[in-house]
Image (cartoon, rainbow, N blue to C red):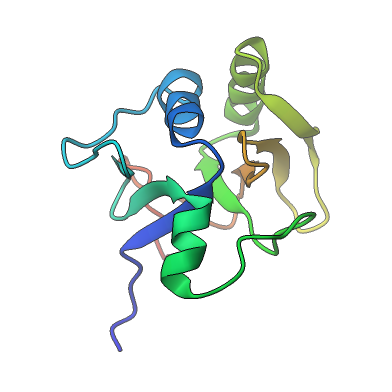
Length: 141
């Protein structure tokens, strides 16, 4: 199996609300291949898809029930601590739920957490151990 990830798919409670969150709060543009049943966002190298949670569970043949911590987070890494603070200030002004305020963290970085309308956690972080190129891709040294 090739070492790659093509799509991160999120099961969402309300596709219109979730799509609006990513378009309005993050300022992302959905792909032309999006339709009334699924939304795609082109990221740097992978896609984020939004799909109704009940239909995603049905497709995977699992129960759509579940609450609490989902066992994963998504991450947006910045190039500086200041960029983390700026992003959180901007997102908070747009009404985004701040789960954890920016702070120095045990692993040597600086991070904060926000939640989307389905309580999917996004870490907004500066990691000094993962330098990024001009396109926001992690570079190995």
